[in-house]
Length: 178
Image 1 (tube, rainbow, N blue to C red):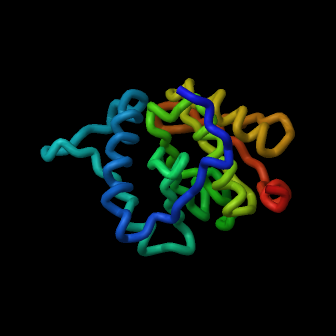
Image 2 (cartoon, helix red, strand yellow; image 1 turned 120 degrees about the horizontal axis):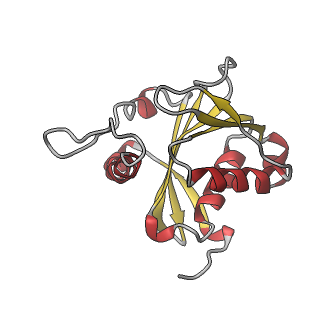
Image 3 (cartoon, rainbow, N blue to C red; image 1 turned 90 degrees about the horizontal axis):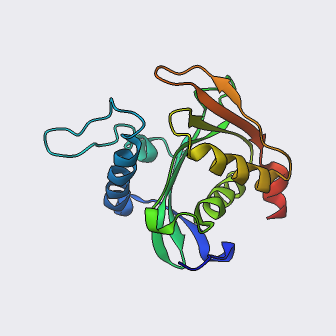
């Protein structure tokens, strides 16, 4: 696979018209996550579903949904919320869900999309990574460090089934420069 230049990566706001595309991608994402969260199961129709999805249209000031595109092709999605479950500040932004198609991974697509997300919504951010998803921890550590230009470190936050690594940073200064 070829290396992807960051300029090839864009975020497209998900509209009601794109809801089916996002729902399909969410099925792939939740399937991947079921490896780390065995309590996640398909329903009788063979679908996982994603219960919070309607909030992204009902509460557009607090929920942000984007399709990730690379060279114009669909590459994944990013869901963000204003209000993080690990922050008392209701204005803190949170990477709620983030997914890059397997064929697009390890080509800087995820890093470029994360950087685009943080620049698009400048402010204080939290990124939560479950200890059960150990492969994601180096990705997020590197993406945040490259974006902020400072070492990224996480604090441990208790979880129901596994602890969470929580990164916190402010994207406002970097967003102004991107």
